[in-house]
Image (cartoon, rainbow, N blue to C red):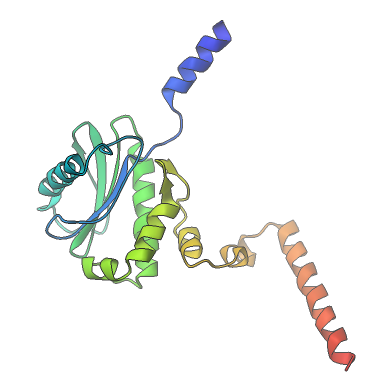
Length: 197
């Protein structure tokens, strides 16, 4: 019974970080992208729009900074960052770690900046909506954080092969030797085919 009670308490503590929402709003507070998770504001569009308007109203006069800012709104923690005339938001519960939410925001912001070639404004985000939506999907799914490395997000969105993800300088010695061995066999195979004609 003690083990069961302990497991139940651990389950209630929820040790996995959860993102309630990822939002991108334009300079007038209109939604560009919104992804709600874990039952947060998922009941109706009207509830979502009210939350987004309150969020925009509270952050619209904040100065444009190169780093993230944080506010508390309706028992949530909202971390946001200006992207030209748009704002990118990551929302978590009051119990969530702000540093983790900031890492999620930074990953999304950096990935989008790379994908949009530094043109982070509402127009560029709308023009590349498919890349933006794929980036959000690669970042968070169902509230669970999937990836916080911006380069991995970019590679997945652009569907680059796994080889592009790990440059040789980031490999372990055994991985580097295995890669060198594969390349050696490939080059020897190409030489044999060149000699056979």
